[in-house]
Image 1 (tube, rainbow, N blue to C red):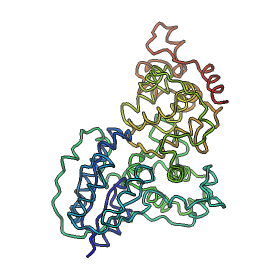
Image 2 (spheres, rainbow, N blue to C red; image 1 turned 30 degrees about the vertical axis):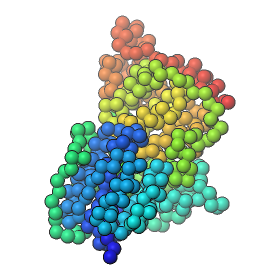
Image 3 (cartoon, one colour; image 1 turned 60 degrees about the vertical axis):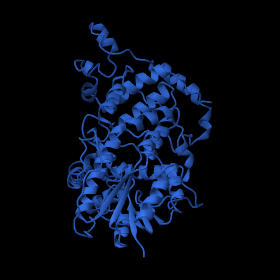
Length: 460
């Protein structure tokens, strides 16, 4: 007699989750989640993201209980222990089939390989992507190495497809009790981020109704809430990219044809996420901290711990860089434009290995996601797939003038400069010294010299 089980991973949602729906349709009344504290540490998972995961799992446990589905939360420590823990659990309860969504990182793929021969059939779905990796390829059947052709190929396959809007799963049994397990006790680090589905749905609808049509105009301005703010939920699979596109199509049915619109600009960001996920699966070396473009293996990075610490702490002497890093350290999140600026500064101005920045981001971000984080860092460092050319080096002063012209964002996080006039705030050193109030750290590098040094280093 068959008995089905659903295994939650980074797909922490009850709606728009085909694997969960199929498990329930095949009789599943139990689900499973592994707490892997040691593995999370190995992966540099941030404290704030772990807190959000636990809060969300606790919420799901209560929601599932109302539907008559029991959620088991098991301590597995790491992926080495997990297969034996899973085998013990399925043997004890007599499960014959396990439903789950694939994760595309190499450690997760290896974990699943070990879990395929434990006595229950492991049925895996592609629930975290818009389409399975390897399904959007060149005419030669190869993965695209440039984003724009990938996007065009994706659109040619899906521009006529209407993405479904997620529907909540149905009740299967009488409600059962739920009590928060000790493994899910949190410290409140992520409390500013809601985990309730009703609230999240309102947040999504508010973004689509009030911000989507102005997204392309305001998404690069860090002093206003011009982005969706949904990245932590996409990273954990609390919401899906498919559902977001479906909701946009509900408002703009032909949005996938109207590629010059603000709405498509947002979809374009979801497609970059898709692109990086496909790359991560097709090229496992990205999971091993390898340069995608191997010619940049010759770059000699500087081992400057003092400069790296200054960058981490937001004490570089460049206000927009420091404000961004302080935002990350204080909130666990950073505006996307600022991520590009600080990544360029670390890898080009300081000539410090992108891997150190990537690891630091993962240790702080509430929306930490290996594929997107790796892709973004290698883009900035010019070592990645379809990366910016090595000679494109962001000037942090002109970037600040363009995207935070009156210094509103800088003043919020670099409070020692809150009195400085907008004319001087983007690089205030001459001004604050002239008025006799040297309240801010001196720049740790000079822009022109740092730029010339980076060009020389990358020319190898």
